[in-house]
Length: 285
Image 1: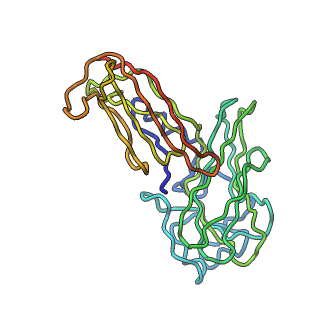
Image 2: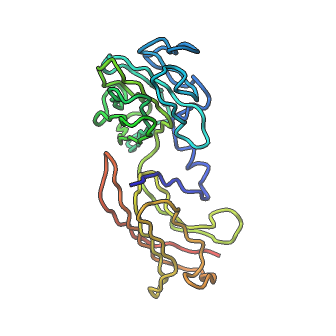
Image 3: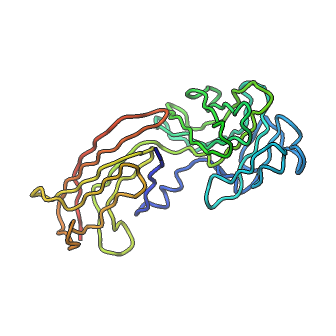
Protein backbone atom coordinates (compact mmCIF):
# COMPACT_ATOMS: atom_id res chain seq x y z
CA UNK A 1 0.00 0.00 0.00
CA UNK A 2 1.36 3.40 -0.91
CA UNK A 3 1.88 5.65 2.09
CA UNK A 4 2.84 9.27 1.91
CA UNK A 5 2.89 12.40 4.01
CA UNK A 6 0.09 14.87 3.36
CA UNK A 7 1.80 18.24 3.65
CA UNK A 8 -0.87 20.42 2.15
CA UNK A 9 -0.47 23.77 0.35
CA UNK A 10 -2.44 26.49 2.08
CA UNK A 11 -2.27 29.82 3.78
CA UNK A 12 0.57 28.29 5.78
CA UNK A 13 2.27 26.45 2.94
CA UNK A 14 5.66 28.07 3.45
CA UNK A 15 5.80 27.24 7.13
CA UNK A 16 4.45 23.74 6.53
CA UNK A 17 7.16 22.79 4.11
CA UNK A 18 9.83 24.39 6.28
CA UNK A 19 8.85 22.11 9.15
CA UNK A 20 11.55 19.64 8.14
CA UNK A 21 14.26 20.48 10.64
CA UNK A 22 16.94 18.51 8.77
CA UNK A 23 19.25 20.58 6.59
CA UNK A 24 20.28 19.05 3.25
CA UNK A 25 18.31 15.89 4.00
CA UNK A 26 18.05 15.21 0.26
CA UNK A 27 21.85 15.64 -0.18
CA UNK A 28 21.34 17.98 -3.14
CA UNK A 29 23.81 20.43 -1.57
CA UNK A 30 26.49 17.76 -1.41
CA UNK A 31 28.62 16.67 1.53
CA UNK A 32 27.57 19.39 4.00
CA UNK A 33 25.39 19.93 7.09
CA UNK A 34 25.97 16.49 8.61
CA UNK A 35 28.72 14.39 10.16
CA UNK A 36 29.60 10.71 10.06
CA UNK A 37 31.90 8.16 11.67
CA UNK A 38 32.57 7.09 8.09
CA UNK A 39 35.10 8.68 5.78
CA UNK A 40 34.24 10.61 2.63
CA UNK A 41 35.63 8.12 0.12
CA UNK A 42 37.65 8.32 -3.04
CA UNK A 43 36.30 10.22 -6.04
CA UNK A 44 36.60 7.16 -8.23
CA UNK A 45 37.29 3.46 -7.95
CA UNK A 46 35.92 1.58 -4.96
CA UNK A 47 35.21 4.41 -2.48
CA UNK A 48 38.15 3.19 -0.43
CA UNK A 49 36.41 0.08 0.92
CA UNK A 50 34.08 -0.44 3.88
CA UNK A 51 33.40 2.50 6.25
CA UNK A 52 33.42 4.98 3.37
CA UNK A 53 30.68 6.96 1.65
CA UNK A 54 30.09 9.42 -1.19
CA UNK A 55 27.39 11.92 -2.10
CA UNK A 56 26.69 11.30 -5.79
CA UNK A 57 24.07 10.54 -8.42
CA UNK A 58 25.74 7.38 -9.78
CA UNK A 59 25.96 4.09 -7.87
CA UNK A 60 27.24 1.44 -10.27
CA UNK A 61 30.53 3.21 -11.03
CA UNK A 62 31.92 2.43 -7.57
CA UNK A 63 31.83 -1.36 -7.76
CA UNK A 64 31.17 -3.59 -10.77
CA UNK A 65 28.70 -5.71 -8.76
CA UNK A 66 26.58 -2.74 -7.65
CA UNK A 67 23.26 -1.98 -9.32
CA UNK A 68 22.65 1.34 -11.07
CA UNK A 69 20.10 3.06 -8.83
CA UNK A 70 18.34 6.39 -9.25
CA UNK A 71 17.84 9.06 -6.60
CA UNK A 72 14.68 8.58 -4.53
CA UNK A 73 13.39 12.09 -5.26
CA UNK A 74 11.98 12.50 -8.78
CA UNK A 75 13.49 15.98 -8.99
CA UNK A 76 16.74 15.12 -7.21
CA UNK A 77 19.96 13.56 -8.40
CA UNK A 78 22.09 13.06 -5.28
CA UNK A 79 22.03 10.54 -2.45
CA UNK A 80 24.33 9.15 0.21
CA UNK A 81 26.13 6.06 -1.15
CA UNK A 82 27.52 3.91 1.64
CA UNK A 83 29.99 1.03 1.84
CA UNK A 84 29.19 0.03 5.43
CA UNK A 85 31.45 -2.00 7.71
CA UNK A 86 30.88 -4.36 10.65
CA UNK A 87 31.01 -1.82 13.48
CA UNK A 88 27.81 -1.96 15.52
CA UNK A 89 26.20 1.44 16.20
CA UNK A 90 28.67 3.30 14.00
CA UNK A 91 27.15 6.67 13.10
CA UNK A 92 26.58 6.66 9.36
CA UNK A 93 24.79 10.03 9.32
CA UNK A 94 24.23 12.59 12.11
CA UNK A 95 23.06 16.16 12.45
CA UNK A 96 22.66 18.50 15.41
CA UNK A 97 19.29 20.28 15.58
CA UNK A 98 18.83 23.36 17.78
CA UNK A 99 15.20 24.26 17.00
CA UNK A 100 13.53 21.51 19.06
CA UNK A 101 10.31 22.42 20.87
CA UNK A 102 9.90 20.82 24.31
CA UNK A 103 7.11 18.29 24.86
CA UNK A 104 6.58 17.86 21.12
CA UNK A 105 6.27 14.64 19.14
CA UNK A 106 8.46 14.43 16.03
CA UNK A 107 8.74 11.97 13.17
CA UNK A 108 12.30 10.96 12.20
CA UNK A 109 12.23 9.47 8.70
CA UNK A 110 14.48 8.33 5.87
CA UNK A 111 14.42 6.34 2.64
CA UNK A 112 16.77 3.36 2.26
CA UNK A 113 17.75 1.17 -0.70
CA UNK A 114 20.33 -1.54 -1.41
CA UNK A 115 22.86 -1.50 -4.23
CA UNK A 116 23.63 -5.22 -3.90
CA UNK A 117 21.49 -8.09 -2.61
CA UNK A 118 24.14 -9.49 -0.25
CA UNK A 119 23.52 -8.86 3.47
CA UNK A 120 21.22 -5.83 3.00
CA UNK A 121 21.87 -2.96 5.37
CA UNK A 122 20.35 -2.89 8.85
CA UNK A 123 19.97 0.57 10.36
CA UNK A 124 18.46 2.23 13.40
CA UNK A 125 17.61 5.77 14.42
CA UNK A 126 19.31 7.39 17.38
CA UNK A 127 18.51 10.68 19.16
CA UNK A 128 20.73 12.22 21.83
CA UNK A 129 22.70 9.00 22.12
CA UNK A 130 19.70 6.71 22.69
CA UNK A 131 18.56 4.20 20.10
CA UNK A 132 15.07 4.95 18.83
CA UNK A 133 12.63 2.21 17.85
CA UNK A 134 13.70 -1.07 16.28
CA UNK A 135 16.35 -1.77 13.62
CA UNK A 136 15.06 -1.66 10.05
CA UNK A 137 16.27 -3.58 7.03
CA UNK A 138 17.01 -2.35 3.55
CA UNK A 139 15.25 -4.41 0.90
CA UNK A 140 17.19 -7.26 -0.71
CA UNK A 141 15.76 -6.02 -4.02
CA UNK A 142 18.33 -3.57 -5.32
CA UNK A 143 17.29 0.02 -5.98
CA UNK A 144 13.98 -0.46 -4.15
CA UNK A 145 13.48 2.58 -1.93
CA UNK A 146 11.60 1.98 1.31
CA UNK A 147 10.58 4.53 3.90
CA UNK A 148 11.25 3.96 7.59
CA UNK A 149 10.37 6.21 10.48
CA UNK A 150 9.95 6.37 14.22
CA UNK A 151 8.31 8.95 16.45
CA UNK A 152 10.11 10.72 19.29
CA UNK A 153 8.82 13.01 22.02
CA UNK A 154 11.26 15.75 22.90
CA UNK A 155 10.34 15.97 26.61
CA UNK A 156 12.51 18.72 28.11
CA UNK A 157 14.95 18.78 25.17
CA UNK A 158 15.48 21.97 23.17
CA UNK A 159 18.12 20.44 20.88
CA UNK A 160 18.81 17.01 19.46
CA UNK A 161 21.65 15.03 17.96
CA UNK A 162 19.83 12.85 15.44
CA UNK A 163 21.67 9.92 13.86
CA UNK A 164 21.23 6.90 11.63
CA UNK A 165 23.47 4.10 12.90
CA UNK A 166 24.68 0.76 11.55
CA UNK A 167 23.27 -2.47 12.99
CA UNK A 168 24.65 -4.92 10.41
CA UNK A 169 27.83 -6.73 11.45
CA UNK A 170 28.20 -8.64 8.17
CA UNK A 171 31.12 -7.45 6.08
CA UNK A 172 30.32 -8.81 2.60
CA UNK A 173 27.48 -6.76 1.16
CA UNK A 174 25.96 -4.22 3.53
CA UNK A 175 26.10 -1.57 0.80
CA UNK A 176 23.24 0.86 0.76
CA UNK A 177 21.78 4.25 -0.07
CA UNK A 178 20.15 6.95 2.07
CA UNK A 179 17.99 9.81 0.83
CA UNK A 180 15.35 12.33 1.91
CA UNK A 181 15.99 12.37 5.65
CA UNK A 182 13.47 14.39 7.65
CA UNK A 183 12.55 15.36 11.18
CA UNK A 184 9.10 16.97 11.36
CA UNK A 185 6.41 17.54 13.99
CA UNK A 186 3.95 14.64 14.00
CA UNK A 187 0.20 14.98 14.26
CA UNK A 188 -2.87 16.37 12.54
CA UNK A 189 -4.79 19.61 13.01
CA UNK A 190 -7.81 21.29 11.41
CA UNK A 191 -8.33 25.04 10.99
CA UNK A 192 -11.66 26.51 12.06
CA UNK A 193 -11.99 29.33 9.52
CA UNK A 194 -11.40 29.78 5.79
CA UNK A 195 -12.12 32.47 3.21
CA UNK A 196 -12.77 31.14 -0.33
CA UNK A 197 -12.61 34.52 -2.05
CA UNK A 198 -10.00 33.67 -4.72
CA UNK A 199 -7.41 36.03 -3.30
CA UNK A 200 -4.80 33.28 -3.25
CA UNK A 201 -4.76 33.12 0.56
CA UNK A 202 -6.65 30.51 2.62
CA UNK A 203 -8.98 29.75 -0.31
CA UNK A 204 -9.46 26.07 0.49
CA UNK A 205 -10.26 24.10 3.61
CA UNK A 206 -8.23 20.99 4.41
CA UNK A 207 -6.30 19.18 7.15
CA UNK A 208 -2.79 20.15 8.15
CA UNK A 209 -1.17 16.73 8.42
CA UNK A 210 2.26 15.78 9.71
CA UNK A 211 1.76 12.03 9.70
CA UNK A 212 1.61 9.07 7.34
CA UNK A 213 -1.91 8.58 5.95
CA UNK A 214 -2.84 5.59 3.78
CA UNK A 215 -6.62 6.17 3.41
CA UNK A 216 -9.24 8.73 4.33
CA UNK A 217 -12.84 9.89 4.02
CA UNK A 218 -13.53 13.62 4.36
CA UNK A 219 -17.13 14.92 4.52
CA UNK A 220 -18.53 18.41 5.17
CA UNK A 221 -22.24 19.18 5.77
CA UNK A 222 -24.17 22.41 6.33
CA UNK A 223 -26.37 23.25 9.33
CA UNK A 224 -29.27 21.25 7.85
CA UNK A 225 -27.12 18.15 7.36
CA UNK A 226 -26.88 18.57 3.58
CA UNK A 227 -23.58 17.24 2.25
CA UNK A 228 -21.61 20.03 0.55
CA UNK A 229 -18.31 18.18 0.11
CA UNK A 230 -17.08 14.60 0.08
CA UNK A 231 -13.86 12.91 -0.93
CA UNK A 232 -12.67 9.36 -0.26
CA UNK A 233 -9.36 7.72 -1.05
CA UNK A 234 -8.54 4.06 -0.45
CA UNK A 235 -4.92 4.91 -1.19
CA UNK A 236 -4.06 8.51 -0.49
CA UNK A 237 -2.95 10.00 -3.78
CA UNK A 238 -5.08 13.15 -3.82
CA UNK A 239 -5.28 16.06 -1.42
CA UNK A 240 -8.70 16.47 0.26
CA UNK A 241 -9.65 20.14 0.18
CA UNK A 242 -12.91 22.04 -0.08
CA UNK A 243 -13.12 25.19 -2.18
CA UNK A 244 -16.42 26.40 -0.74
CA UNK A 245 -18.53 25.07 -3.65
CA UNK A 246 -21.67 22.94 -3.32
CA UNK A 247 -21.23 19.25 -4.07
CA UNK A 248 -22.91 18.37 -7.38
CA UNK A 249 -23.78 21.90 -8.54
CA UNK A 250 -20.57 23.91 -8.07
CA UNK A 251 -22.56 26.83 -6.67
CA UNK A 252 -20.96 29.00 -4.00
CA UNK A 253 -21.94 27.95 -0.50
CA UNK A 254 -23.23 30.59 1.90
CA UNK A 255 -21.13 32.05 4.67
CA UNK A 256 -21.74 30.36 7.98
CA UNK A 257 -20.95 27.33 10.11
CA UNK A 258 -20.35 23.83 8.70
CA UNK A 259 -19.64 20.45 10.29
CA UNK A 260 -16.88 18.12 9.12
CA UNK A 261 -15.95 14.48 9.66
CA UNK A 262 -12.50 13.09 8.81
CA UNK A 263 -11.90 9.34 8.97
CA UNK A 264 -8.33 8.30 8.22
CA UNK A 265 -6.14 5.23 8.40
CA UNK A 266 -2.52 4.96 9.45
CA UNK A 267 -0.31 1.98 8.69
CA UNK A 268 3.33 2.48 9.65
CA UNK A 269 6.03 0.90 11.78
CA UNK A 270 5.14 3.12 14.72
CA UNK A 271 1.42 3.69 14.40
CA UNK A 272 -1.52 1.91 12.83
CA UNK A 273 -5.30 1.82 12.94
CA UNK A 274 -8.31 3.94 12.04
CA UNK A 275 -9.04 7.34 13.50
CA UNK A 276 -11.97 9.77 13.37
CA UNK A 277 -11.92 13.52 13.91
CA UNK A 278 -14.97 15.82 13.88
CA UNK A 279 -15.49 19.54 14.27
CA UNK A 280 -16.93 22.81 13.02
CA UNK A 281 -15.62 25.37 10.58
CA UNK A 282 -16.71 28.86 9.65
CA UNK A 283 -16.86 29.96 6.01
CA UNK A 284 -16.26 33.70 5.83
CA UNK A 285 -16.96 35.92 2.84
